[in-house]
Amino acid sequence: MDVTIIGGGVFGLLYAYKEVRQGKKVVLYEASSRFGGLIESKKLPWGIAESAANSILTTPTVLSFLEPLGIDWVFTEEKLARYILRDGKMMRMPLYWYELAEMFLRSLFIVSDGSSQTAFDDCKRYLGSAAAEYLCGAFVTGIYGVHPSQLDLKTAFPGLVVPRGHTALSYGLSLPRKVKARMAAPRNGMEGIIHALVQYLTPRAELHLNCPISTLPPGPVVLAVPAHEAARLVPQYAPLLMQVEYASMTSVTCVTETPFLQGALGVLIPPCEKSPLLGILANSSFFPCRSIDASRYHIFTVMLKDMDEESIRAFFAPHKIISMTVSKHRHAIPIANKALAACHEIRDKVKFVGNWTGDVSLRGYIERISHE
Ligand SMILES: Cc1cc2nc3c(=O)[nH]c(=O)nc-3n(C[C@H](O)[C@H](O)[C@H](O)COP(=O)(O)OP(=O)(O)OC[C@H]3O[C@@H](n4cnc5c(N)ncnc54)[C@H](O)[C@@H]3O)c2cc1C
Image (cartoon, rainbow, N blue to C red; front, side, top):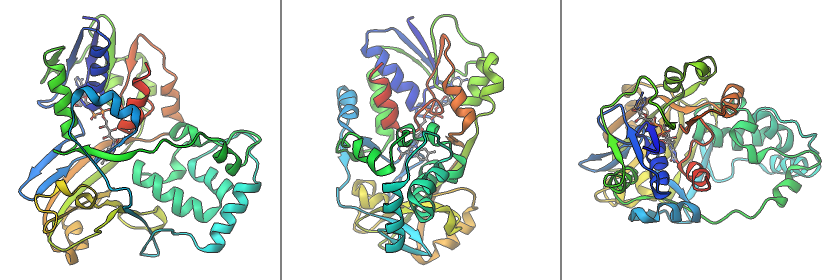
């Protein structure tokens, strides 16, 4: 064998796929009885409930990397409304005119000395308090499940650190224009990516389920497992790996017959709103095929930190919920802090590729490994 991959979540499978396409002989071990890890598309009588990732940003690199898998993609509409909650109201732009003016002036005049702190502090410095609270707060909490003051900007979003001598505006204008890309998902749900990978790999590699690995096998090894599992397998890095913190997250998919957030992508909820919710994704609005009848059954997914099912039901009582699917993840998203940054420096013959090693999104990860 040329390489042993431990972990059959989406990152492990994608890595196996890349290696096989490069002509390597691969064996992959997954501890549980199914491939996919966090990603699972549960089939309900009313449609699909995603347990973790709901969509993937399909840049040209992503589409060409996955092309041989023959995935039947469904793309979101371009004009879907995105809301941010402010003072309990859903707003397309949550800043008032004087806050926008402050944002503009700061972005024009505050010159970077090259230092960077947390995502929150940097945003406050270059764009102002309101932008830090409502734009940065909403965006970061929606993705990472934590307050932006818990994220080291350089680790979480290295491309957003304003370089020395630049203002936010001059740096923004110097960046290459973003490639247009739409959010997409396989027609049968995100687990469709897992099925397609397994189907592709089965005749070309050795895939094993129900094989929890407790000692490293000889030869080149790739670890696609959470950091605490990697710590068990590579004890010399355990003191560092055990410091990696994860945000826990609960994803609750609700089905209702009452129209909800139609024509919208969802609502981001900044932490200063003090809501138990982190964000709401209007699932069957952006992917009508997630519902067996999108004109009748509306499916939305709520991300939250901690809330029992009873309280969620009470919270959404006006929407007459007919079904609720709850997926709790204790180790959902790694927190991009200084400890995580130190892990990114590890260079060893064992390769780490879990979602704590640089990218949490499938798009970022695919773009990285497709260049290796
Ligand atoms: C609520 C939520 C929403 C998200 N939304 C999006 C989104 O919309 N778009 C996006 O791109 N990303 C999203 N993400 C992020 C994305 O889903 C994850 O980063 C990705 O699924 C992580 O995959 P992974 O393979 O690194 O880890 P995991 O899925 O955790 O897989 C690790 C695998 O390793 C196995 N394993 C562990 N120990 C061993 C061992 N000793 N031996 C063998 N196997 C072992 C586990 O059983 C598991 O299958 C979301 C995440 C969450 C939690």
